[in-house]
Length: 142
Image (tube, rainbow, N blue to C red; front, side, top):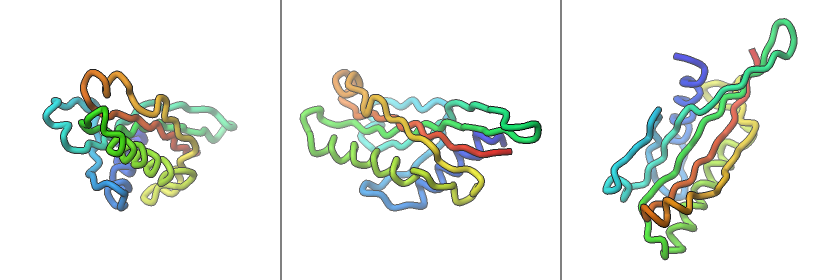
């Protein structure tokens, strides 16, 4: 496997090994596409997104690997409590990784988290589906 797939696999394992406010099973994908009827269940998808390499000196480089974590579920757009719960789950996941190394890859640490926009309004409007994508940057030096 590659560094990106190793990190994505480690993220899946850590998500599935933790207890969050809402139960789910994270799955690694390259193309997380689901049919609308499937979205009645909570989906947490982990997708390798980007990698940036910078030379530190002649012998070492930093590798910033971005992993997207999508949280998706079909909801009634007027059900504020259900949407609040999903927003809370996204924040829990972000806090879980914030500033910590991966257990199976202690040389890899989460150094940044992006969540913009915090949810996709068009998905909520058109699909009646909550969608939020966290992008977590994991850094290693080699």
